[in-house]
Length: 182
Image 1 (spheres, rainbow, N blue to C red):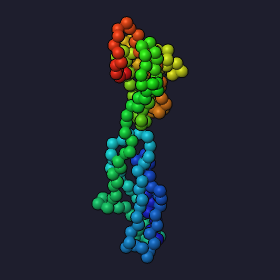
Image 2 (image 1 turned 30 degrees about the vertical axis):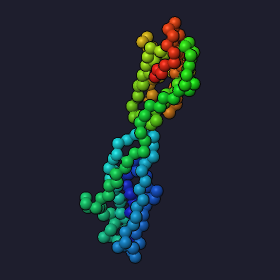
Image 3 (image 1 turned 180 degrees about the vertical axis):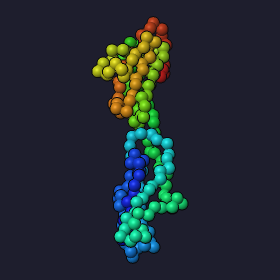
Image 4 (image 1 turned 180 degrees about the horizontal axis):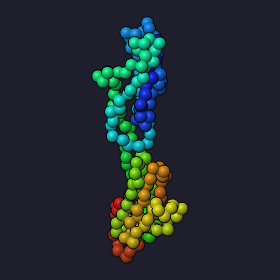
Protein backbone atom coordinates (compact mmCIF):
# COMPACT_ATOMS: atom_id res chain seq x y z
CA UNK A 1 0.00 0.00 0.00
CA UNK A 2 1.30 3.43 -0.95
CA UNK A 3 -0.22 6.51 0.68
CA UNK A 4 -0.03 9.75 -1.32
CA UNK A 5 -0.49 13.05 0.53
CA UNK A 6 -0.82 16.31 -1.39
CA UNK A 7 1.43 18.94 0.20
CA UNK A 8 2.32 22.56 -0.39
CA UNK A 9 -1.11 23.45 -1.78
CA UNK A 10 -2.09 27.14 -1.73
CA UNK A 11 -5.55 26.91 -0.16
CA UNK A 12 -6.51 30.33 -1.55
CA UNK A 13 -6.09 29.00 -5.08
CA UNK A 14 -7.00 25.29 -4.94
CA UNK A 15 -8.88 22.95 -2.65
CA UNK A 16 -8.46 19.21 -2.44
CA UNK A 17 -11.62 17.46 -1.23
CA UNK A 18 -9.45 14.49 -0.26
CA UNK A 19 -5.89 15.22 0.89
CA UNK A 20 -4.72 11.61 1.23
CA UNK A 21 -5.00 8.93 -1.46
CA UNK A 22 -4.15 5.25 -1.12
CA UNK A 23 -2.86 3.01 -3.89
CA UNK A 24 -3.42 -0.68 -3.14
CA UNK A 25 -0.92 -3.23 -4.48
CA UNK A 26 -3.53 -4.59 -6.92
CA UNK A 27 -4.01 -1.06 -8.37
CA UNK A 28 -0.33 -0.25 -8.91
CA UNK A 29 -0.71 0.17 -12.67
CA UNK A 30 -4.12 1.88 -12.86
CA UNK A 31 -3.29 5.15 -11.08
CA UNK A 32 -5.38 7.28 -8.77
CA UNK A 33 -7.56 10.17 -9.85
CA UNK A 34 -6.93 13.23 -7.70
CA UNK A 35 -9.73 15.80 -7.65
CA UNK A 36 -8.67 19.44 -7.51
CA UNK A 37 -11.18 22.25 -7.08
CA UNK A 38 -10.48 25.93 -7.61
CA UNK A 39 -10.32 27.90 -4.36
CA UNK A 40 -13.32 30.09 -3.75
CA UNK A 41 -12.81 33.52 -2.26
CA UNK A 42 -13.97 37.06 -3.01
CA UNK A 43 -10.69 38.34 -4.46
CA UNK A 44 -10.25 38.97 -8.19
CA UNK A 45 -7.02 37.17 -9.12
CA UNK A 46 -5.22 36.58 -12.37
CA UNK A 47 -5.14 33.02 -13.67
CA UNK A 48 -2.37 31.12 -11.93
CA UNK A 49 -0.50 27.89 -12.52
CA UNK A 50 -0.38 26.07 -9.20
CA UNK A 51 2.10 23.23 -8.71
CA UNK A 52 0.89 20.29 -6.64
CA UNK A 53 3.53 18.45 -4.67
CA UNK A 54 3.11 15.08 -3.02
CA UNK A 55 4.65 13.04 -0.22
CA UNK A 56 4.70 9.25 -0.47
CA UNK A 57 4.67 6.79 2.43
CA UNK A 58 4.74 3.00 2.25
CA UNK A 59 6.06 -0.08 4.01
CA UNK A 60 7.60 -0.86 0.61
CA UNK A 61 11.07 0.72 0.79
CA UNK A 62 11.02 1.29 -2.98
CA UNK A 63 8.17 3.78 -2.61
CA UNK A 64 8.55 5.16 0.89
CA UNK A 65 9.65 8.81 0.83
CA UNK A 66 10.20 9.02 -2.92
CA UNK A 67 9.80 12.33 -4.72
CA UNK A 68 8.42 12.88 -8.17
CA UNK A 69 10.84 13.62 -10.97
CA UNK A 70 10.43 17.18 -12.25
CA UNK A 71 8.65 15.93 -15.39
CA UNK A 72 6.11 14.01 -13.33
CA UNK A 73 5.03 16.92 -11.14
CA UNK A 74 1.47 18.08 -11.61
CA UNK A 75 0.44 21.68 -12.22
CA UNK A 76 -3.10 22.97 -12.36
CA UNK A 77 -4.18 26.22 -14.01
CA UNK A 78 -6.72 28.03 -11.85
CA UNK A 79 -9.01 30.61 -13.46
CA UNK A 80 -10.73 32.97 -11.05
CA UNK A 81 -14.49 33.52 -11.11
CA UNK A 82 -14.44 36.99 -9.52
CA UNK A 83 -14.42 40.28 -11.45
CA UNK A 84 -13.45 43.54 -9.77
CA UNK A 85 -16.11 46.21 -10.31
CA UNK A 86 -17.46 49.25 -8.53
CA UNK A 87 -21.19 48.74 -8.02
CA UNK A 88 -23.13 52.02 -8.14
CA UNK A 89 -26.85 51.65 -7.54
CA UNK A 90 -29.32 54.53 -7.57
CA UNK A 91 -31.59 53.96 -4.58
CA UNK A 92 -33.95 56.78 -5.51
CA UNK A 93 -36.36 57.18 -8.36
CA UNK A 94 -34.80 57.55 -11.78
CA UNK A 95 -36.13 61.09 -11.97
CA UNK A 96 -35.85 63.80 -9.33
CA UNK A 97 -37.00 67.40 -9.44
CA UNK A 98 -34.74 70.41 -8.95
CA UNK A 99 -34.04 70.92 -5.25
CA UNK A 100 -34.97 67.31 -4.41
CA UNK A 101 -32.63 64.72 -2.97
CA UNK A 102 -31.78 61.25 -4.18
CA UNK A 103 -29.46 58.54 -2.93
CA UNK A 104 -27.04 56.09 -4.47
CA UNK A 105 -25.09 53.26 -2.89
CA UNK A 106 -21.52 52.28 -3.76
CA UNK A 107 -19.72 49.04 -2.97
CA UNK A 108 -17.14 46.78 -4.56
CA UNK A 109 -17.92 43.44 -6.20
CA UNK A 110 -14.76 41.75 -4.91
CA UNK A 111 -12.46 42.03 -1.92
CA UNK A 112 -9.51 44.32 -2.71
CA UNK A 113 -5.94 43.46 -1.80
CA UNK A 114 -5.19 47.16 -1.14
CA UNK A 115 -7.40 50.19 -0.37
CA UNK A 116 -9.57 51.35 -3.31
CA UNK A 117 -10.51 55.03 -3.69
CA UNK A 118 -13.69 55.85 -5.63
CA UNK A 119 -14.47 59.46 -6.54
CA UNK A 120 -18.06 60.48 -7.25
CA UNK A 121 -18.25 63.66 -9.34
CA UNK A 122 -21.69 65.28 -9.28
CA UNK A 123 -21.22 67.38 -12.41
CA UNK A 124 -23.12 70.65 -12.78
CA UNK A 125 -26.66 69.37 -12.18
CA UNK A 126 -26.11 67.79 -8.73
CA UNK A 127 -24.44 68.53 -5.43
CA UNK A 128 -23.40 65.97 -2.85
CA UNK A 129 -25.04 66.56 0.51
CA UNK A 130 -22.06 66.42 2.87
CA UNK A 131 -23.93 65.51 6.05
CA UNK A 132 -25.68 62.64 4.27
CA UNK A 133 -22.82 60.25 4.89
CA UNK A 134 -23.37 60.33 8.66
CA UNK A 135 -22.67 57.05 10.34
CA UNK A 136 -19.76 56.37 8.02
CA UNK A 137 -16.31 56.93 9.46
CA UNK A 138 -14.72 60.21 8.31
CA UNK A 139 -11.68 58.26 7.08
CA UNK A 140 -13.89 56.37 4.64
CA UNK A 141 -15.85 59.18 2.96
CA UNK A 142 -14.68 62.73 2.32
CA UNK A 143 -16.74 65.38 0.54
CA UNK A 144 -14.30 67.90 -0.87
CA UNK A 145 -14.70 71.61 -1.43
CA UNK A 146 -14.99 70.83 -5.15
CA UNK A 147 -18.23 68.92 -4.44
CA UNK A 148 -16.77 65.50 -5.20
CA UNK A 149 -17.21 62.65 -2.74
CA UNK A 150 -14.27 60.34 -2.20
CA UNK A 151 -15.04 56.89 -0.77
CA UNK A 152 -12.31 54.52 0.41
CA UNK A 153 -12.93 50.76 0.50
CA UNK A 154 -10.66 48.27 2.25
CA UNK A 155 -10.53 44.49 2.58
CA UNK A 156 -12.57 44.87 5.79
CA UNK A 157 -15.49 46.92 4.37
CA UNK A 158 -15.51 46.33 0.59
CA UNK A 159 -18.96 44.69 0.63
CA UNK A 160 -20.58 47.21 2.98
CA UNK A 161 -22.41 49.77 0.88
CA UNK A 162 -21.88 53.49 1.35
CA UNK A 163 -24.93 55.60 0.61
CA UNK A 164 -24.31 59.02 -0.91
CA UNK A 165 -27.11 61.61 -0.87
CA UNK A 166 -27.17 64.08 -3.75
CA UNK A 167 -29.43 67.01 -4.56
CA UNK A 168 -30.53 68.19 -7.98
CA UNK A 169 -29.42 71.80 -8.37
CA UNK A 170 -32.31 74.26 -8.14
CA UNK A 171 -31.77 77.10 -10.56
CA UNK A 172 -33.98 79.54 -12.44
CA UNK A 173 -33.26 78.06 -15.84
CA UNK A 174 -36.02 76.10 -17.60
CA UNK A 175 -34.00 73.15 -18.89
CA UNK A 176 -36.71 70.55 -19.20
CA UNK A 177 -35.85 66.99 -18.36
CA UNK A 178 -32.19 66.06 -18.79
CA UNK A 179 -30.09 62.99 -18.18
CA UNK A 180 -27.11 63.78 -16.00
CA UNK A 181 -24.98 60.97 -14.66
CA UNK A 182 -23.23 61.23 -11.30
